Image (cartoon, rainbow, N blue to C red; front, side, top):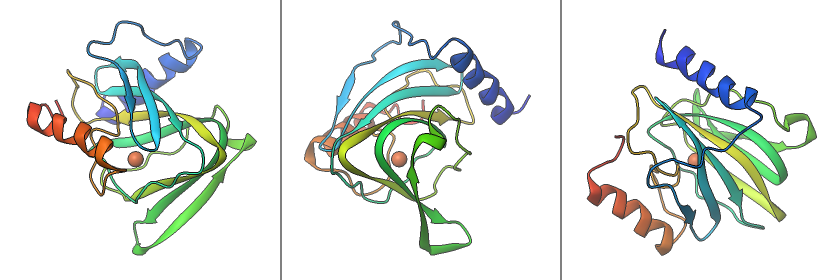
Length: 169
Ligand SMILES: [Fe+2]
């Protein structure tokens, strides 16, 4: 089975469990940045699932990650922005709503620029990291992050990961 099909069956395990959160992910914590609060809830092989709260009325810079990405939208006022691969200067924006709730979204390949904007109540989602290899030291998507940070608090988390030498491991 290739990494992608393997990831899909692992994600399905998480969904079939009723979104059961694992309590024993090593080194897990609550990651807080200027615009987000999140914690890991599931990790198996090449899949890392994280519960994300995007704070109210925030906007992330456009950024990318070294992993492939899916989301399960949970609720709130959340608009997703994605760079168009065939026209990198333009982007598509989608306001997430009831029709997206608890549905596994399409895969966004690693390296695609994207961002989020929230309204006054903020937004929640499960962010799913899909790597091409198994991950031993999972961390927040906000830490395995490429682009302009959300601020000095966020930048410090990124720097700590780089200094650890564990990026992508
Ligand atoms: Fe992202």
